[in-house]
Length: 303
Image 1 (cartoon, rainbow, N blue to C red):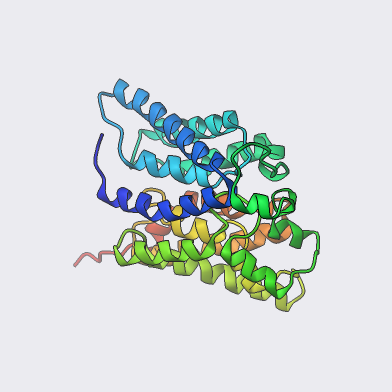
Image 2: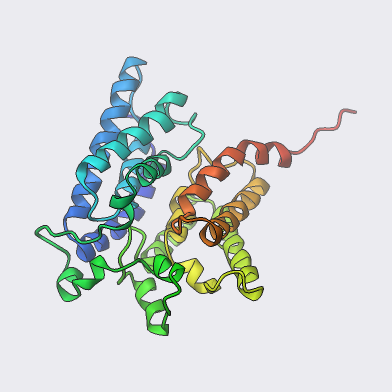
């Protein structure tokens, strides 16, 4: 195993989010994360062994993130498919760590999202023991629409709903609900110089400006704050957009990269059928990362 202290810090920042998700939705979340990690590691180990190399600790970041961005009630076989597809087609096909163009966790989720939409968008009721404490307090919570989907259906959002969204008292993917923990993780990753603050800030600014523009001109009924704290935007900005491999290298390019992700997320939320558009925005931006590096690199003038 190739040790990577930077990737280890990302895993540490994800542990409180995982703990809250287990408390909120039940031990099925932990099982999802364990299965995801096992599949991702096994897939990488097999192909790296063929090349006479060792797996890297980054694979556990992929496995943990993938397990957290899937719904708690997802069948385990879908987790297996997502883990294998993301690791093999988004990482190993390109040559392994450091060579992948796309974020593996996002590729895995996007594949099962398109292939098995009913498991990703409709089935929130776990129906297995043991469930999270919020399941017992509010059974309807698990079968209701996510805040973004409710907004898409033009259901009213009350002031108290914003507190629920921020705290995580909502249905949704396991690790994307507790916004306060994601913010704490972002501060930790920035202070330890693990994640780029430029990408995180510019992603949120891009989303804020685009959402504000759409709201002012009546294009979308979703408010700017609701757009920022709903769905997987914040989680994607902190953990996926900042992936050092698939993101740009140049500091100035990172600002443009984040703006692209944030604005695309709001545009896709507004005009497409996919309200959970952050994953597609990150994958689209991944394609532009090399171009952004090229456009922002300093030109050397020959004397």
